[in-house]
Length: 138
Image (tube, rainbow, N blue to C red):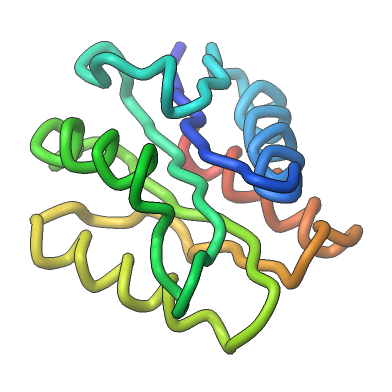
């Protein structure tokens, strides 16, 4: 059985709702899942798959007071694992996700599924996409 971490930061609850759907999808595919807020993450070595969720902030950037320090702490351990990204946004066109995907590529982190983004609260399609993302990392 694979072990999956769904790690997220959420300001309004939208990205948390997405994280819960990702976790549900991974569990449904048979994985053992830990749903973790970034403040609760120390290490990802024990996980086979890691889904990372962060909304767009400011000028389409990752949240920098809690999420980015967590990401910087675990990035070195993500190479070779199944990794996927998700998050919500309130404006723009998803530039923050494209930048984040580029950052992963620069760090040698291969993504195992297409990233899932949604505008504001996740609708039925976004929830379904989050569940599929969870199944992909399971």
